Image (tube, rainbow, N blue to C red; front, top):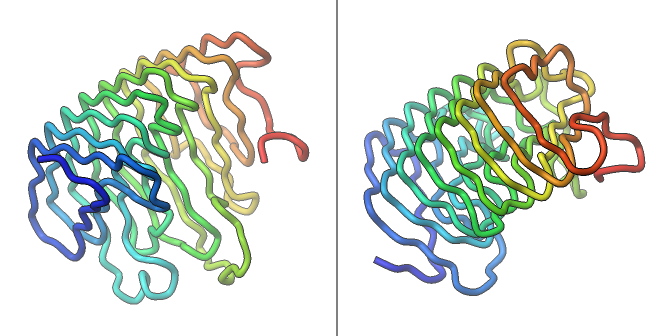
Length: 246
């Protein structure tokens, strides 16, 4: 089935399968995610194609105080054998992640057609929440703008809610057998008060070809062994400066 101007919003759901559908946003609509999984568990998405004008799939669990009040994580999610074409993200976590996200596997998927950021994590200081045990495995990326878009201070546009402590924590995020081509390897920006550490990201057999390297900020003791970068311009991994990558 082909859908125009549509969005699947799986909310407060226990056990749900999406199998073999085709979602295509043919004209620009702001924030038109393909599928949102929100505070739900035991979800399977398989053999599905998505073309959107925001994230193809976004996994969420509530925003700020309301998300913490409900306290329902998104968990036990499998996304496999899918094709994510144009979109702002392939599979994204956030930015509404105040209830937490855990135990998610994305495997055997193709992300192409100038998808902006196939592998995406986003939050804000007001969100809080823990995102853990996430695996991207056997992923092919072609013609993307950037491979990684990991930003804990995403879209910091006033009015902003006060920071919530502890800040969002990413833990046990695994990238395995990732083969990608993009304009940029991407960005990895943690909180100054809570940098990404040695329990955040793990890479295994990842091969990325890009024009520009990976821009990082507030990253401490992350082991990039297992991430092979073939870069045409500049350094493979470089620190973001005050005047770059904003």
